[in-house]
Length: 485
Ligand code: NDP
Ligand code: BG6
Image (cartoon, rainbow, N blue to C red):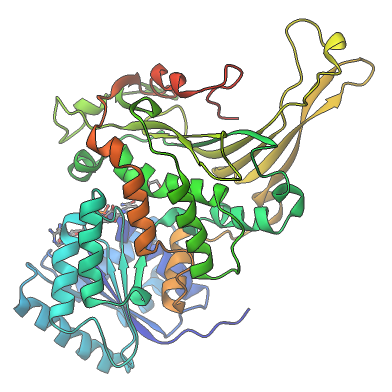
């Protein structure tokens, strides 16, 4: 489908940071080279580092070269024409007035009509001052459209999220606001909606009558890396559960939306959050990785990582049991977990169906085996795709055996866009469907309030394991257990 992109200025606060270089710049570059943004996107990077356009362009070029994206010539041309930089040491009114003047100068140079995106790729502590300053100098509106993109985590709890929403709404209309959660940009995550609502076969089984439990695992093999400054104040709960993992859960549990548009979809996701039964202390387990082995490599424990407090109680693992107390899901446990330094990087949703009500084949099965329940395993990453596990008769024997129907994206599709590429393009087009609405973010913090008010001490777990054994206690049915398939 051909869509029309309006020329615009993309202002990125935090333009010297990790997110800019690892994700935003490559995503914007792919959009440019893919022909989506040619001659339409001009970037203005802002950060405290004192440097000029030339140094910023040089850095950006190196990032793209290192990522293997381009030859030096094409990189140079794009950088020289479209990248600008402004150092800003503080958030003072004078500096923001200088930013407004710089924006106008860049817009004149590139003959842009005043369409602007402000992307806050900043530490969350810097969101409020930046939003306040943008509003105070009148950068919340322009001759064209103005959009504000806010990274996660949005607040630290319900009170701070509300405060941040109030501040945002004081200066911007909700229709201008894009709270980003990059998991929603992943193709496999978006596909959850298509998979559920374009296939009547699955949707008719998608309820408490047929489903026994749902498990969502978002496991990382990496540790905290160089991000202790941020991670020590966030922990796995604020970094992953409140946003990415909760988003996956709402997409699995939501009702069919009235239409495929931003508000209809976001409305149904909020309803899921509102339906979840209050969380009790026995419903969650925190963990923290100790030294261990990930693959063949020995790795240090969290407390020995650079810039981590040697007595830190920050959790690097969270497992949680939730119950969506509505007509469709009452009584079906949703198990969710995430952690760093786990055995391998895998994000997976396992929908565990009920077993047949009568075991007709028991006489043929022998003492220790029984029929396995059907499973739908949705692989979010890596090895994107899904597997449907079902039972068949083993030829020549009176015995059932589990087999899989398998779909892998890579067998059929090439060029799967990165999540940030999809989301940045949506911001440019003005499509809020894959962004988190104000009430949604508040509903999520509200849901987790009991856990935030009384966070448990983290149990140690070996790096390279699947987390602390205490997480097993969350499983309610004796024939169930945590699994990665
Ligand atoms: P970094 O620490 O790498 O970068 C932060 C950027 O903000 C730098 O450009 C820094 O540059 C600038 N900065 C730092 N402190 C301040 C301040 N007080 N006021 C103004 N500017 C400041 O962080 P990341 O890039 O990793 O993260 C940025 C945001 O993106 C966070 O909200 C994070 O949660 C989110 N995010 C990051 C992901 C990632 O993979 N990195 C993934 C998903 C979300 P300078 O010192 O020059 O000002
Ligand atoms: C980020 C978290 O939001 O998501 C990181 O801050 C985490 O801690 C990352 O590593 C995981 O993203 P992905 O796309 O690699 O699964």
